[in-house]
Length: 326
Image (cartoon, rainbow, N blue to C red; front, top):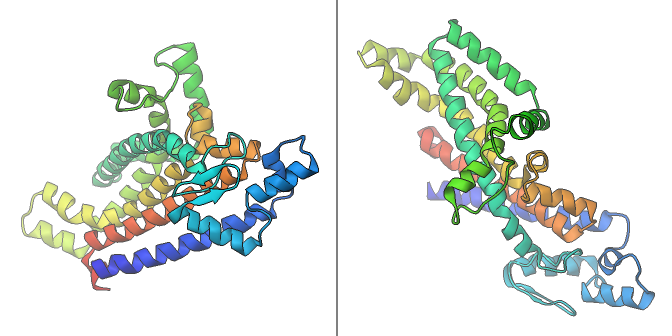
C-alpha cells in the first residue's frame, strides 16, 4: 500500500508542477501589463517602472517562475510590500494583501458548502439507487429512475433561483442563505447553508442514484452473489457485504470528482446564493483583473482534483484487493 501511494503521490506532485507552470505562463499571455493593473488606471511612467520592479516583473520570465514556485515553500520578499511568508502566492492587485490569506479566509465557506451537500447527496443517492435496484421493474424503481432523470436534467442556477424566490422571498419558509462559522454557532452554520445543500443535493443525487442502480443490478447478477445466496446468507448480508462493495468503485470515482469540483470553486452555487467562497472569489478576480488571485484559485482547483484522484486511488486499493496486487 505504501509503495502504491508513493507512486501516486509522486505523479500528483509532477502534475501539480505542470499545472503551476501552465497557470503562471498563461498569466503573461493575458493582454496588458500586469504592473499597470497593479499600479492602477492613472499611473505615471516612472511609477509604472517602479511597480514593475517591486513585483519582480523586470526579471526574465523563467526567473520569475522559479521565484514564484520557491515562494510557495520558503516565502518571498517584495521591494515595497515586504516579506510574504510561505506559502506565498503573491499579493492581490486589489487589496494589496497576501493571496494565500484571502484564500484561507474564503476556504471555510466552500468547504462547509461542499461537505454538507456531499453527505446529503451521497447518502440519498446511494440509498435510493440500492432501493431501486432491489425493486427492479417495480413502482419504486420507476419513480427513482424518473426522479433521477429529472434531477440530472436541471441546472443549479435554475433550481437555486426558484428555491430562493419561493422558499426565501415568497413563502419565507427559510432565511436567506448565509455563512456562520461552525465554531461560533453550529446550528446557525447548518441553517444558513441548508438551502444550498438541498439544491446541490437535488442536482447531484440524480447521478448517484442512476450509477448505484445500474451497478447494483449488475452486481446482483454476478456469480459470487448468487453463490452467497445459495449458501443461505441473508439478503441484507448479500447486499451490504458483497454487492455493495462492488458498487462502490464507480461511486468513489464520481464522488472524488464532484468533491474536487466543489472545493475548487462552486462558482454557480456561490454566485446564486451570494456566498463568499472560492468560486465567488474567482469570479471577482476575473472582474477586477486580479491576476495573482485568479492564478491561486486555478491552482487550488487543480490541486483539489489531483489530491482527490490520489484519495480515490487509495480507496480503490481498500475496496478491491486486486488494485493493491497490481
